[in-house]
Image (cartoon, rainbow, N blue to C red; front, side, top):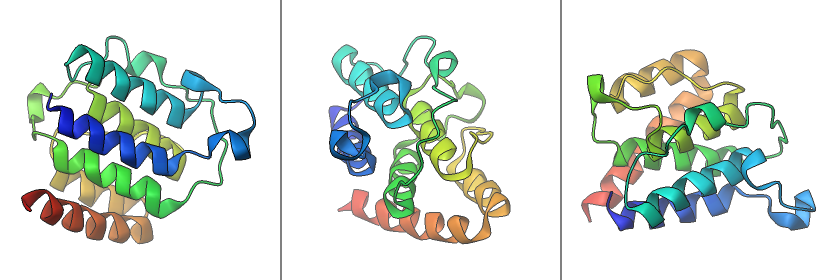
Length: 149
């Protein structure tokens, strides 16, 4: 995976993080944001998009709340822009899928089905939550345009 993607993801994930200032001690992989950091770091350090058993390790019970929707949605938008639209070859252990799943749990309480196609995903997300779906579509368009530059 392109290191540029890992760096962009890292920046987006860091914007979501409450930091120890709000959380106290960092929970690391037991936090959805911390797990996102872990998955991205694993991908970057091992130069692979796949995090072995990553999906099985998602911290589903982490429900800290208080995150900023715009930052979380921006992170989801980045994962969608970086997605290669793998469709049938989609791997739930892909770092992009793992980060997206964590951000979904933060925003809507559960990860959503993903068939490897960002456009279909945007439509499904909007059906689940219309307002957040509209905001996500807008951020996706902005991120897509930014990647062209």
